[in-house]
Image 1 (spheres, rainbow, N blue to C red):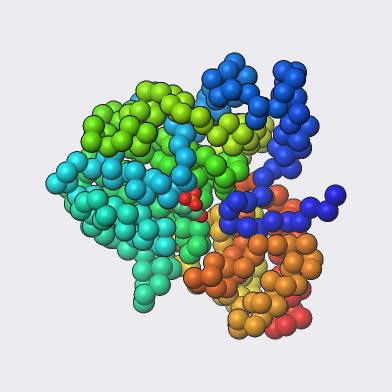
Image 2: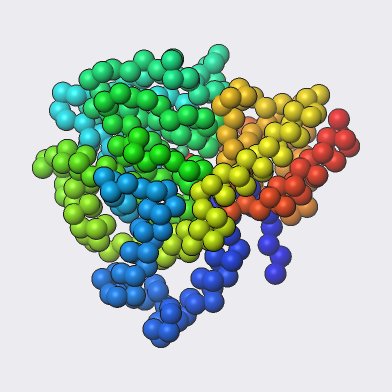
Length: 362
Ligand SMILES: Cc1ncc(COP(=O)(O)O)c(C=O)c1O
């Protein structure tokens, strides 16, 4: 078996033991004589998976009783539309902190159905190369909620702090950094994340909702799109994608066995440190476009002296068994997505390769 080192931004690498476990019991789920994917979403076998997934996430993020874990479909993109539809009443406005392509999309969706405004930006000279500091946020005291993207997968920026929004509920798109470190969930009204980076495969979106906010879901919204429906139906109002949830459970078991969110943070800081040290140690060849305080520990990005050299590096990395390092097409450059599952030893292999590449081409 020749597995490559996969630096893709998402769907992304998953822990090998998690994949092997799923493979091993794919045909016969826990002695039931059938695959989990053949079980009813209302049967006992899936019910156990569902409950364990929720309770593991509760345990790992220390989720308080005020909040509930929900599962939805349509990715984070569906949440761009559903957050305003559920949380903003007619005549109200919502605040959006702008830090990249995903916040742009979230704001654009919010504007389709009502009022929304920019409440801060990470743009410098037309490019998103940082996240704004708390003091730079321009918050509307009457906002229905404040939305931000905690980690900007494309730009390689990440908030080093949780914004303080006074009374307005804080809504976070945590698609690319949920569970990368411990979190004070009580500060949030809603957290949402597509599973396909830190939590499992594509197909399910995890929400952590402050339960009282479900009361805002309007009767004018179709039932399947209401947070209140999902909350009251324990995310089983229709046929849930059972396999993605099962995979998320397996990933969460792995995170727990590694030592939980604190262990993830330590591992992620070590991996990101390794890449940023490489960049900062060879500034005549590598350049990180992101302001130091805003650097992501999930998606470090960097540039080489020319685009030709970047293309050469991407090709040579692939030859050496390291794939997915091409920066997003909208920004170019190199991006190394190093989510929880990425092994520190594999990051070290990449850094050794990159240093040798710099030496040979510098
Ligand atoms: C921060 C962030 N938000 C939203 C999305 C869109 O997610 P989805 O494709 O699940 O709708 C992505 C996807 O990469 C992302 O990184």
